Image 1: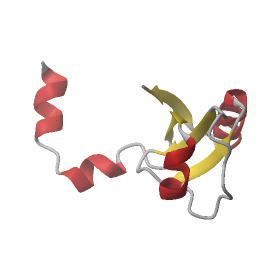
Image 2 (image 1 turned 120 degrees about the vertical axis):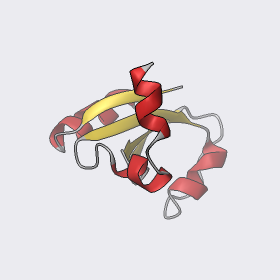
Image 3 (image 1 turned 45 degrees about the horizontal axis):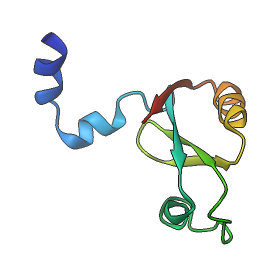
Image 4 (image 1 turned 90 degrees about the horizontal axis):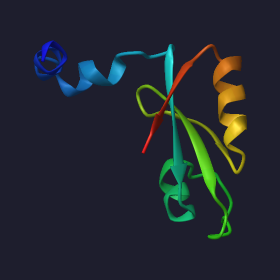
Length: 85
């Protein structure tokens, strides 16, 4: 209950910077999403399972076909990770 009350008082921009430089999130991605989040990426085989690491504010950090790599990169950057479904 307290968390709900606290988050409803934050603006969207305030919420976006929470955890900046400290928290990253890992998300499975489809190849159709890659160009939106990683515009510099080449065309990707649609059959590949892809994993992405993002900063707390949504900044893309890493795209890989190996989920473990996202955790290694987060640790290298001293980020605590969370997974999004």
